[in-house]
Length: 207
Image 1 (tube, rainbow, N blue to C red):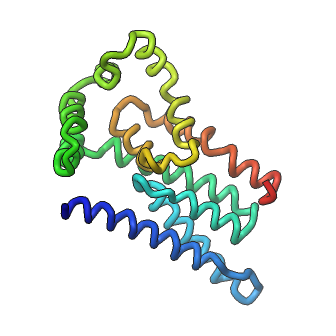
Image 2: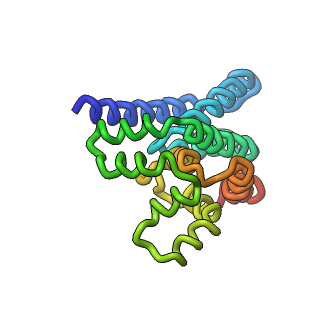
């Protein structure tokens, strides 16, 4: 029960951070407060990276708040910080001990997930994917291996993906799985994250 309370409290704290940042961004830009605006943008960008990298936290709302507060000209910063946050989550997952995650799942009663991690931990990339797709057809296995980067690009862009971990959780699990190489993952994120900031930058907030 204490573990569940901690998890719920952690998510609520992240939501409070998002609300606080949105209030901070609710500033009227004038020559007198130009320096304050710069500090606010820097603070929001760093907070955006940290929150978006967390599992189950829809930190993208901060990006929307920044666009609403400062206009479409800040879209390139949103793009850069989003890619940075996703890669941060991926790197954390890549170096996070699977045994620690296994104990975490066991601690909150997710025994089947813990057992699956225990089986997958010592295996190679292909063997891990085979374990995850047990009972599926060989064709499904080949498709999953061949198009896994397309799948991760679609997952991070799916509305409401915070239910399955959010962008941070998805990328953390991608790193943890060992199925995604750093270079290809970075290139995938560069393309996957680009559409919305690019449209806002070119077409403005009216979209």
